[in-house]
Image 1: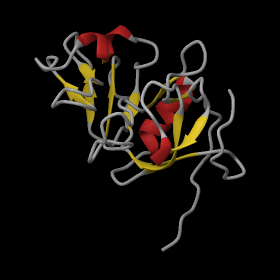
Image 2 (image 1 turned 90 degrees about the vertical axis):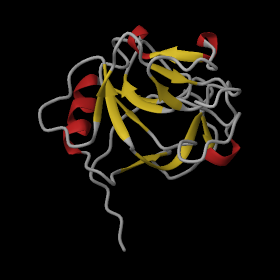
Image 3 (image 1 turned 180 degrees about the horizontal axis):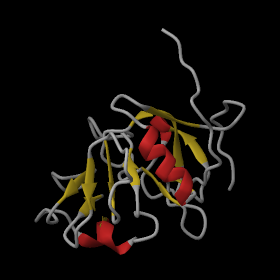
Image 4 (image 1 turned 180 degrees about the vertical axis):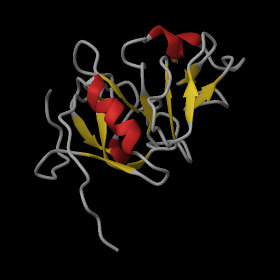
Amino acid sequence: GEWRARGRAAARFGAGGLVEGTRREQGTNTTPTGLFGLPFAFGNEAAPKGTRLAYRPVTPDSWWCEDNASRAYNRWSEPRAADCRAEESERLADYPVQYAHAFVTDFNYRHPVRGRGAGIFLHVNGKGATAGCVSVPAVTMRTLLRWARPGAKLVVGTEDGGTAVTRY
Protein backbone atom coordinates (compact mmCIF):
# COMPACT_ATOMS: atom_id res chain seq x y z
CA GLY A 1 0.00 0.00 0.00
CA GLU A 2 2.98 2.33 0.00
CA TRP A 3 5.66 3.26 -2.54
CA ARG A 4 9.20 3.93 -1.46
CA ALA A 5 11.97 5.13 -3.75
CA ARG A 6 14.86 2.69 -3.72
CA GLY A 7 17.17 4.95 -5.64
CA ARG A 8 17.50 7.68 -8.19
CA ALA A 9 19.70 7.87 -11.21
CA ALA A 10 20.64 10.64 -13.58
CA ALA A 11 19.33 9.52 -16.95
CA ARG A 12 19.22 10.55 -20.57
CA PHE A 13 15.95 10.67 -22.43
CA GLY A 14 14.76 11.01 -26.01
CA ALA A 15 16.03 13.92 -28.10
CA GLY A 16 12.42 15.17 -28.32
CA GLY A 17 12.02 15.32 -24.53
CA LEU A 18 9.43 13.74 -22.28
CA VAL A 19 5.75 13.22 -23.06
CA GLU A 20 2.92 11.64 -21.11
CA GLY A 21 2.83 7.98 -22.14
CA THR A 22 -0.72 7.90 -23.51
CA ARG A 23 0.10 10.81 -25.84
CA ARG A 24 3.37 9.41 -27.17
CA GLU A 25 3.67 8.77 -30.92
CA GLN A 26 6.22 6.51 -32.56
CA GLY A 27 8.99 8.29 -34.45
CA THR A 28 8.90 11.46 -32.32
CA ASN A 29 12.10 10.71 -30.34
CA THR A 30 10.17 11.35 -27.14
CA THR A 31 10.40 9.33 -23.94
CA PRO A 32 7.10 8.33 -22.33
CA THR A 33 6.64 9.24 -18.68
CA GLY A 34 4.94 6.94 -16.24
CA LEU A 35 5.38 3.87 -14.10
CA PHE A 36 6.57 0.83 -16.04
CA GLY A 37 7.21 -2.79 -15.21
CA LEU A 38 10.35 -4.56 -16.35
CA PRO A 39 9.32 -7.83 -18.05
CA PHE A 40 12.88 -9.02 -18.70
CA ALA A 41 16.46 -7.91 -19.25
CA PHE A 42 18.80 -8.61 -22.15
CA GLY A 43 22.27 -7.86 -23.33
CA ASN A 44 25.19 -8.26 -25.67
CA GLU A 45 27.22 -9.10 -22.55
CA ALA A 46 26.52 -11.77 -19.95
CA ALA A 47 24.22 -10.88 -17.08
CA PRO A 48 26.08 -9.46 -14.08
CA LYS A 49 26.37 -11.87 -11.17
CA GLY A 50 23.31 -11.43 -8.96
CA THR A 51 20.86 -10.58 -11.77
CA ARG A 52 17.43 -11.86 -10.72
CA LEU A 53 15.20 -10.96 -13.65
CA ALA A 54 14.96 -13.24 -16.65
CA TYR A 55 17.91 -12.29 -18.91
CA ARG A 56 18.13 -13.01 -22.63
CA PRO A 57 21.50 -13.02 -24.35
CA VAL A 58 21.60 -11.09 -27.63
CA THR A 59 22.63 -13.15 -30.66
CA PRO A 60 23.31 -12.03 -34.24
CA ASP A 61 19.66 -13.00 -35.00
CA SER A 62 18.07 -11.01 -32.13
CA TRP A 63 15.69 -8.29 -33.33
CA TRP A 64 13.18 -5.96 -31.75
CA CYS A 65 10.30 -5.57 -34.18
CA GLU A 66 9.12 -1.96 -34.50
CA ASP A 67 7.18 -2.49 -37.73
CA ASN A 68 3.57 -1.38 -37.13
CA ALA A 69 2.32 -3.80 -39.78
CA SER A 70 3.93 -6.87 -38.22
CA ARG A 71 2.25 -9.41 -35.97
CA ALA A 72 5.50 -9.24 -33.95
CA TYR A 73 5.15 -5.48 -33.29
CA ASN A 74 6.96 -4.42 -30.11
CA ARG A 75 8.37 -7.89 -29.48
CA TRP A 76 11.71 -9.67 -29.40
CA SER A 77 12.01 -11.71 -32.56
CA GLU A 78 14.68 -14.36 -33.11
CA PRO A 79 15.15 -14.69 -35.98
CA ARG A 80 13.41 -11.59 -37.34
CA ALA A 81 9.78 -12.37 -38.09
CA ALA A 82 9.05 -12.78 -41.80
CA ASP A 83 6.49 -9.94 -41.75
CA CYS A 84 8.77 -7.58 -39.79
CA ARG A 85 10.71 -5.24 -42.07
CA ALA A 86 14.37 -4.82 -41.05
CA GLU A 87 14.35 -1.10 -41.86
CA GLU A 88 11.51 -0.68 -39.34
CA SER A 89 13.24 -2.62 -36.56
CA GLU A 90 16.41 -2.91 -34.50
CA ARG A 91 18.99 -5.66 -34.78
CA LEU A 92 20.07 -5.68 -31.13
CA ALA A 93 23.62 -6.86 -31.82
CA ASP A 94 24.22 -3.64 -33.81
CA TYR A 95 24.31 -1.69 -30.51
CA PRO A 96 27.08 -3.34 -28.46
CA VAL A 97 27.53 -0.35 -26.12
CA GLN A 98 23.91 0.68 -25.54
CA TYR A 99 22.64 -2.89 -25.34
CA ALA A 100 25.57 -4.31 -23.39
CA HIS A 101 22.83 -4.58 -20.73
CA ALA A 102 19.23 -3.41 -20.95
CA PHE A 103 15.74 -3.81 -19.56
CA VAL A 104 12.60 -4.10 -21.63
CA THR A 105 9.99 -1.74 -20.19
CA ASP A 106 6.33 -2.59 -20.43
CA PHE A 107 5.51 0.70 -22.14
CA ASN A 108 3.08 -0.34 -24.92
CA TYR A 109 4.20 -3.94 -24.38
CA ARG A 110 1.41 -5.98 -22.82
CA HIS A 111 -1.31 -4.78 -25.24
CA PRO A 112 0.52 -2.83 -27.96
CA VAL A 113 -1.17 0.12 -29.60
CA ARG A 114 0.26 0.46 -33.11
CA GLY A 115 1.87 3.83 -33.68
CA ARG A 116 2.35 4.51 -29.95
CA GLY A 117 5.93 3.27 -29.96
CA ALA A 118 8.04 0.17 -29.69
CA GLY A 119 11.37 -0.75 -28.18
CA ILE A 120 11.33 1.61 -25.20
CA PHE A 121 14.19 0.23 -23.13
CA LEU A 122 16.29 1.21 -20.15
CA HIS A 123 19.84 0.77 -21.46
CA VAL A 124 23.45 1.92 -21.20
CA ASN A 125 24.30 5.46 -22.35
CA GLY A 126 25.48 6.00 -25.89
CA LYS A 127 26.90 9.29 -27.17
CA GLY A 128 23.88 11.48 -26.42
CA ALA A 129 20.11 11.57 -26.25
CA THR A 130 18.13 8.46 -27.16
CA ALA A 131 15.37 7.90 -29.72
CA GLY A 132 12.88 7.49 -26.86
CA CYS A 133 14.51 5.10 -24.42
CA VAL A 134 15.96 5.91 -21.02
CA SER A 135 19.73 5.48 -20.70
CA VAL A 136 22.09 5.48 -17.74
CA PRO A 137 25.84 4.99 -17.21
CA ALA A 138 27.10 1.39 -17.51
CA VAL A 139 27.92 1.14 -13.80
CA THR A 140 24.37 2.25 -12.92
CA MET A 141 22.91 -0.32 -15.29
CA ARG A 142 24.89 -3.14 -13.69
CA THR A 143 23.70 -1.98 -10.25
CA LEU A 144 20.08 -1.89 -11.46
CA LEU A 145 20.36 -5.41 -12.88
CA ARG A 146 21.52 -6.73 -9.49
CA TRP A 147 18.80 -4.74 -7.68
CA ALA A 148 15.75 -5.48 -9.85
CA ARG A 149 13.51 -8.33 -8.85
CA PRO A 150 10.37 -9.63 -10.56
CA GLY A 151 7.69 -7.01 -10.02
CA ALA A 152 10.15 -4.07 -9.92
CA LYS A 153 8.93 -0.82 -11.48
CA LEU A 154 10.68 2.03 -13.27
CA VAL A 155 9.40 5.57 -12.75
CA VAL A 156 10.16 7.91 -15.64
CA GLY A 157 9.66 11.62 -15.07
CA THR A 158 11.24 14.79 -13.82
CA GLU A 159 12.53 15.32 -10.30
CA ASP A 160 9.55 17.54 -9.49
CA GLY A 161 7.16 14.89 -10.75
CA GLY A 162 6.13 16.82 -13.85
CA THR A 163 5.33 15.17 -17.14
CA ALA A 164 5.56 18.25 -19.31
CA VAL A 165 7.72 17.93 -22.39
CA THR A 166 11.25 19.01 -21.55
CA ARG A 167 14.27 19.37 -23.80
CA TYR A 168 17.45 17.34 -23.31
